[in-house]
Length: 284
Image (cartoon, rainbow, N blue to C red; front, side, top):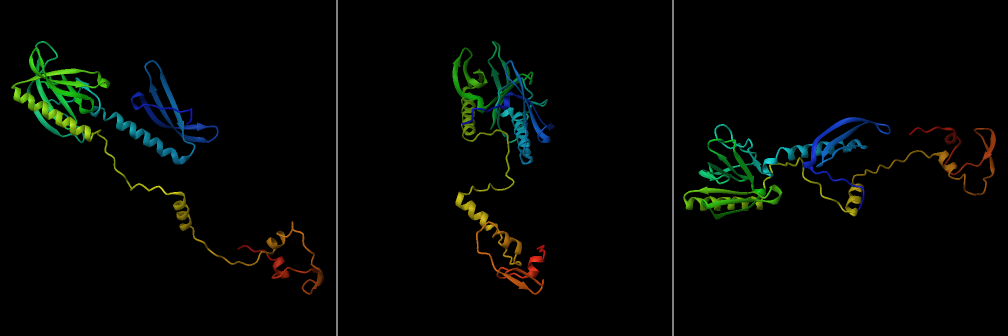
């Protein structure tokens, strides 16, 4: 395994772009600039494509990062966010469907409580205050650890516990009557179970073409051979090549003979050649 490697989480990236850069070796090339942050350090990484065919990978990385940034509502717990419009309607996300709306839900985060409304979808649970819709909380099922009914100082309450990655919040809500409380709890549990079986991350992927099956070594060789067109061409004999092939081979010298075309004694020609072949230049 290579020891020189790098892993950059999308949550640490605060800037990404593709720019033209000048390389002393390759000249003008396409480079990917990634700005990342750590708790106390900032980094800038530059990746250069030496092969023009790999430039498409830069576009893929940027598209995936954009999809990650625009789908945080599917994964992260949000408080006091823009999840409800002025008409007290939830801002529906792509692929999200509203399942139920429950009124008369008290948030028990304070001693006096806040009256509000529950909106249950196939992606999350949203509560907002009736007097101030901007006072709200959005809990994706991905961050929901448990949903159950427990006893509290306010009586029976619906308790939603979040995962450790979202802060381990414990949120209590009171719903009257008790039958309605139990029904809402079962609804959230059912939606949560369904979501975990088939999560919705807000990203739609379409394939432009079916994936190409991988070929074995034998299949790949056969495929290459099938794509080759063998053209047999019988050209004129190449006298130069025939004589050149004998330059490093020891053989008995042929005796001289009289050439009527030249009027001179010349070395006996090889079989299949004439004086005209030796003086002709073939371009085919």
